[in-house]
Length: 588
Image (cartoon, rainbow, N blue to C red; front, side):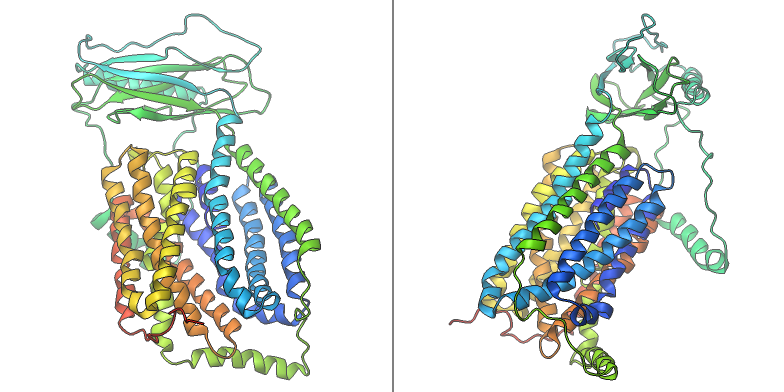
């Protein structure tokens, strides 16, 4: 829910602010799940709830799959994600209860490691395998990729040529053709007026032939009302003026030379069919930039025209250099639809499997209440006893603030890696992000979690609370580094993510153990559910505005802001009280 939806919406062209805002609202079912957790106790068995919720999850995934291709996909898919969120949160309540009912205390302790392992397998699947699968379909649901190289050549004469196709090519097999697979651009400066005129000509050609959508044709929703006019609007402008990222604009007085690559299809698309070509740098010198034609869309009306890709050298580039570009025509909506169909089939298989295989413990029964009044009084007594616990203020502060930095970085980490380098991102592919987070990241996260559990069982939570807090928050600095250095090396990016995920896994142990510690006593199941509700609230609220902040201040200042947001979590630790013996393994 929280990972796949973010990457899917990013690939489908939704803005960072909308992604962060609307996907953060999906946390709400986990925030308020304590409000209906007694219903799961009172009605039917935990086994029944588990099986039925898996069926609903499968139905919701199918709904997402079939609404991705429709025009208003954002609204429809969000509606199905809401169904998934409530079904998942309810499944969470039932599964926790079933675990305690079906196993005695000894087996609960014995299987906790296996349970955690399968949780990590699910994380690897969600954050890695599914993203890699979607990336695979993105690449192979369209035509064969086209590749071309761009060479900066100081020995060439200062001139710009508009290339042409050797001949009119038509074929029964649809494919993209390029005017050349090697583009040589002289580093010696051409007249700036010539450079500008040829660039503007290419832009005009792409617009006139319908290969690109003119800027400004999409209606922008204007914020109105008292709050927008007096609070959010002025705040946004002040933040922009103080911290806004200055866009890098090629100086019109000394522009770098440009070169053109023409693109054409060999066969007409079907009526109403759109064939996109998304072009980006694969490797090489980033001072050789694509400035026009990053995405062109070919239809049955313009397929015989030439779309233009414009490459420009950095004005400071003087020596020989090379960059390699690749254009992919994958059908992104179709790719994600296929991925969600596979997920839906998988969950329906889980539903059938668990319908027959899950055990039926005798203790798994619906709670029979006497009078309705007693039921409601017990319901409210549970909440009252939670808020009367000792040290409740610092405890709530800990649950809400300990992950304040992470709650924002988790929303923008993947968009940061997917965004083009020209706007501050790392320019990775969907498959690259899936590989980094779904394999290397999850492995580091798992190792950090295992190590955290081991050290806490030896010396107790209180002894490791501060080291775990530092491990949780300080590795966020790697994103500050990545945003400033924007390295191309996959090894370096992967290593940075591994450090951040290892620290998160190690530090998150403290969070989970503290919730168990604070929920101990009467109504511990309900109290633990309340703790997880505050945990989700602490993730939801900051996450909602994280995209808005990032779009104002840029990635570099945003990641600095995230590091600053870790400070309140350290402050509240000073007031948290923990039994020194809690978490230490007892000798039998």
